Length: 136
Image 1 (tube, rainbow, N blue to C red):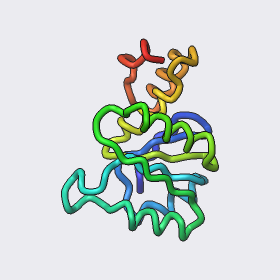
Image 2 (image 1 turned 135 degrees about the vertical axis):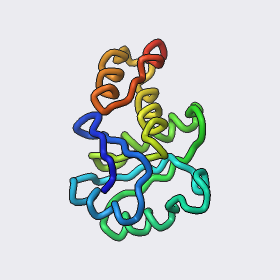
Image 3 (image 1 turned 30 degrees about the vertical axis):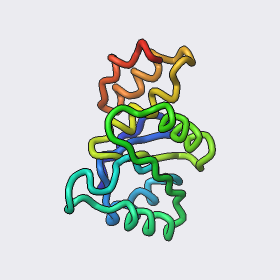
Image 4 (image 1 turned 90 degrees about the horizontal axis):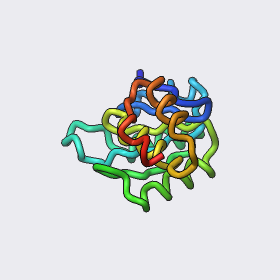
């Protein structure tokens, strides 16, 4: 089972999932999956996005692919923010450890004066984003 870490009522993150996790994600009530891990990043043993997408869509989930490595670029943040605004909630985003997904989520709140709330929500899910606070 995927290690789902609830951040808010409408958003959670998880380390890498595989096709076998998708049914449990649906059963947990998630409506959208956002994939932030590029295929092949972890070698040939990494689950492929295509198989996860096919299973997710067959089970009625919305699937959004926004793969990236390193820090999210402005384009990635724009796409991530649009997905959060448009996709059915609750949303589960995943990557290798969950860190790039939670970072993208946090940075979509940049300039909104919500630094404390965002950092606290991330901490509640097990991620220390204190270093991002000046950007929020």
